[in-house]
Amino acid sequence: MSRGSQDLAELLTRWGIELDPEMVVLALTHRSFAHEQDNLPNNERLEFLGDAVLQLIVTERLYQTYPTHPEGHLAKMRSATVSQPALARVARDINLGEFILLGRGEEKTKGREKDSILSDTVEAMIGATYLCHGLEATRKVVENLLQDLLDHALERGAVMDWKTTLQELTGQLGVRSVEFAVEGTGPDHDRRFTARALIGDRVIGSGKGRSKKVAEHEAARQAVMALREEHGVTTPLGF
Image (cartoon, rainbow, N blue to C red; front, top):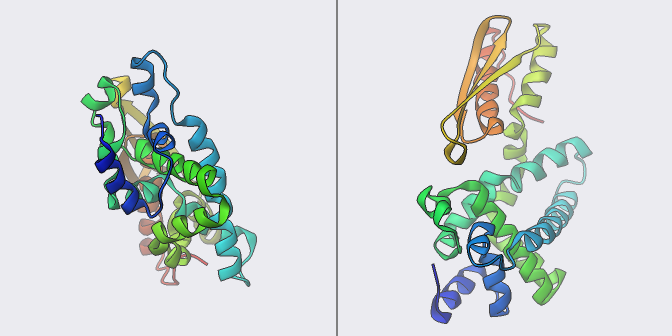
């Protein structure tokens, strides 16, 4: 989908800073579109850069905001803040999906709604912002866009890694370790996964998603809740 200068100006208003127009177009160019246009440059290099810049900004913010929390807690809070679903939410807040340049195949499979494409494009935009304006200006943009996520990093981090929480809980309760069984269905371009969390042959949680990770994450969450209820665990989750 082509966009005029007025539309890109609207996007940049939502983004919070002016950027070089060519850099914006590059940040919005998904590999599927680039491949169909005689292998134009795509946004993957900007995404790589933006991911590193994002990690630095969020890590420093959390380090300064939570001076008494150990590294493990900070890592969970960071993971919750820069996760694929979290960044996809940021993209949806500014309607970024409508500006992404996608190939015909991704258009047919609703690529503009996919968390993976949305989150990758946010990272590419961060990379573009860094190249155009440097770290301090990029920091302001990132902290503004992620403000709600940063404000709630503590509680989000406490429940982000459900598989780790589940492992810690089974150790505390002295029950058998949980194993995961995952099945995938559908064509390669539209795969769906179902995960089951098992203690022996007993299913204690299940989840579905477009990736094994998402399906296992939901299954682990359900397993944590089931075990807590079964064993009467009432202490708060998390740190």
